[in-house]
Image (cartoon, rainbow, N blue to C red; front, side, top):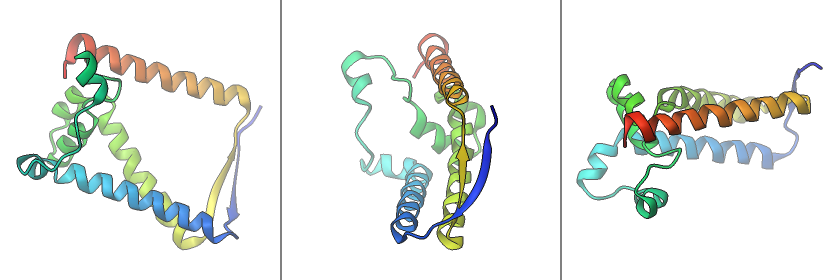
Length: 143
């Protein structure tokens, strides 16, 4: 049971276009969170979380936007308080943009072949981390 990593050339232009769209979306998201404070004062932000609106409790992702905004300001503890996974996801977003730009300009992408058992374990781990983050929000950190 091994994970194999290869690179493959993107022969189809639609794959480069898809990578470009993902990069544009992630850059847009980072720009939105960078200027969130200014946008809030102008009432130009996205609507609040529907889960929170209906239940009065934060969803597993509540605080993510504000967490990214705090990372931009250099307030890491506040970022973690708002959304425990925020700083990690911020770094992952920056890395995803770098990878996406590499794919767009080089025309090559990394291809992973992961055994099903490993995939299931990683999905379980990810859900467990997300659940732990949500419990922290509900019990200790607040919204």
